[in-house]
Amino acid sequence: MSQYDMSKDHPRMPKKVRLGDITVRDGFQHEEIWIPTEAKIYYLQELAFAGIQRLEVTNLGNTRIMPQFRDAEEVLEGVRTDIFNKRLAARGIDPGTIEWTAVTIRESGVDRAIMLKEKDCGPDRVLMMVSTDEEHHFANSATTLPQYWREAERCIRKCKDAGIKMCGTVSTIWGSPISGP
Image (cartoon, rainbow, N blue to C red; front, top):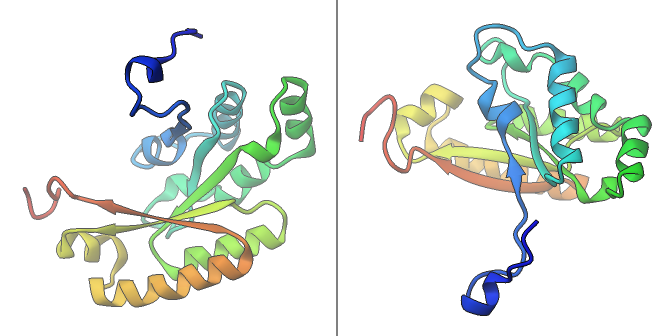
């Protein structure tokens, strides 16, 4: 690692950054060939060993639409084991510094995250997505934007009450794969 301190030359630059990775969730979601659960867990564990502290683990959405995530619970369980936590600690990594994230766009996914948390294998953070394009948003969620915002309000409250962080993200800001630019 470089000892160069960019903040000396660029005082507006942050002294630290926190890296995240979305490969297992975003990168694998459109793969047509099934990626084994064990491979997903291994990949996530190796990313954690490399020092990545924010990892998108899975999507808690409809598995008929996204079959790559039919193992969501098993993957979350796989990164929450005592054995893995001991392996992290042996490498000087505090397991509590890793934030495991699950993505969803519907309240049913938030309910599932809460249920998994109660089983001690749920995500630390839920990321809900909204599209700037109404047609794209409806294709992904089967809700209109006004319906979605009402649902999102309930989801935020549910996550807060359950002790799960909630994060929002906006997609299609540069154009839509359905409606175009």
